[in-house]
Length: 399
Ligand SMILES: *Cc1c(COP(=O)(O)O)cnc(C)c1O
Image (cartoon, rainbow, N blue to C red):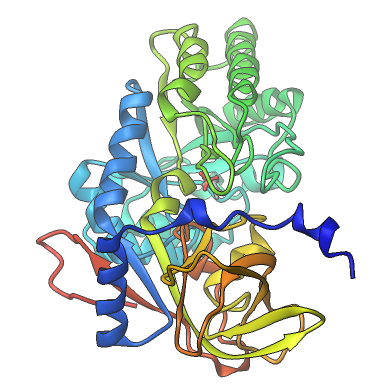
């Protein structure tokens, strides 16, 4: 066994330590509700929304529901004045249930069924995204009511999710679509893109914005109707185990690129992860343990099929810690509860010796975690506990 080698790969543990106050709070919630839990702090949602609004002062922020489609997140952001980015009829239902004015929403799924379009229109959402002619044609019956964005593709192999592999068209195709739309009398409002989720290099946005500006100029040269909107998508990064740029600094070159657009162009964005990642903390407890191959395996009541689904679907590596204050740490494995062998949350992690019932805390667990969790093996999903929720939300606990 190559202990000496694997020590280099050990995840840092001590830097994620919790304050005494946080530890106390977590213990109180576990006494009251049991484990596993997800603690959702609405104050952090507010703080992140304000930070991004400050960093992008001339951009309307449409929160993308996908990473954490929770009614209280919608309510909290609605009160902050946010707009919303929807992709499915389920998400339309969620914002409608929270009385979000439809004018504050856009529907950005590039591929829709006729029913999806009708559901959104019935709610009052009139802005949609297309990236191909087949999709454009679906809007002919609704051309009196809709305004469309054309989604462009900019590949990004470094992102957690390169969303331009599956969606988006080339600049040439965009111009063809805009010409076709003119012929069909469909209003094209503007362009959109998504540089990829957790994009740590702002140059990706700058390049995409510059290309969109060129397309907008070509539209004018070709005597097509001028575009009035640029949607710069989501992708804004957060710090998991490694530090990313502070958001103000990250957005500086983006703002500079946006400043070169004609003044008539309104800019919007679709942040998801940035708003919610930091807002949720997971709490799992140790169900049992065994020594295998020189490491201690702790079996938690939450894992890959539950709150840690992002380890599978999202590439995220969550900072993990325990409530035990103990200088002596041991090479450990944290496994999930199911009978599947891929259900491992962390290997080669240095942890104090834990007892059954001890708690393991995951930070940065708000984005793409519970949203992609399953009920595999009938292990119950973690219960969500709301902290600092809006006075308008009466339920102390949802989900
Ligand atoms: C997922 C998604 C978002 C949110 O992306 P983040 O990387 O979480 O900011 C925004 N827009 C669209 C179209 C998406 O699919």
